[in-house]
Length: 125
Image 1 (cartoon, helix red, strand yellow):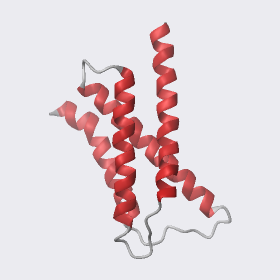
Image 2 (cartoon, rainbow, N blue to C red):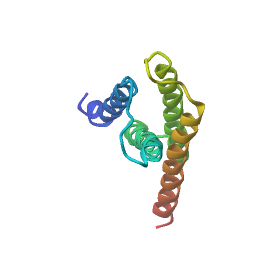
Image 3 (cartoon, rainbow, N blue to C red):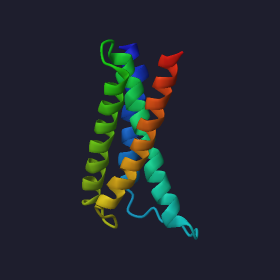
């Protein structure tokens, strides 16, 4: 049980943080670069989610290849990005945007590429 909370606990907490932020009606700031900063934050938060999922799946699976773990963690993170946008349909002041899912996907893709090359480098040693 300790191992479950050690690896899956951060995933659950991070998903909860994303859900909580999505429930806030307006996250705009007075900064000139507000739009760009929010989109970068989208990519980073879902890249982190993909990493946490990869870490948890890695700790839970002894037979799955590194490539499959990257794919599964990326797919789960992408599904959560879709559900996050769906959730925003029900939050006053927010809206559902497939563009945001694409931006989330970019963060997930950056994670996947970095993880893939890291795994290749480790395997070649």
